[in-house]
Amino acid sequence: MLNTAILPASWSGPLQSILRIMLGLLFLAHGTTKMLGFPVSQYTPAAGAMETMTMVTGTLELAGGVLIVLGLFTRITAFILAGFMAVAYFWAHAPMGFHPINNYGELAIMFCFVFLYLAAAGPGTWSIDAKRR
Image 1 (cartoon, one colour):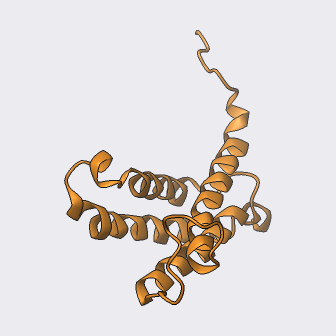
Image 2 (cartoon, rainbow, N blue to C red):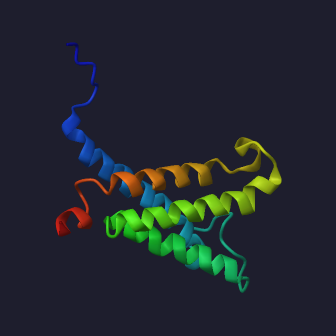
């Protein structure tokens, strides 16, 4: 039988961990820009303009991002964040049009489905969850 694997199967756990860590860091950046004003981006609220929704989303992004990076309570956190991103897509992006490329919703969709994957697959080998088992 011909082995067509490009990478060894033994790399799947560490690569899953790297995916989780990078996903968490990217998600965390959305939380830090909303809650801490760093780095300044299009998502940084104007001074004194912290609305309730911005505080809720920023808190979920900040706390959820940290938990995902650490690999702590990964499955439940990823499941909650997948739902959060689905709601974010339908509330913030879908009203601007059908196609994600035109309504700027690709990132929300990508976050949603990668979080959903982690909720099912788990955190990978390099995580606090794996150490606790």
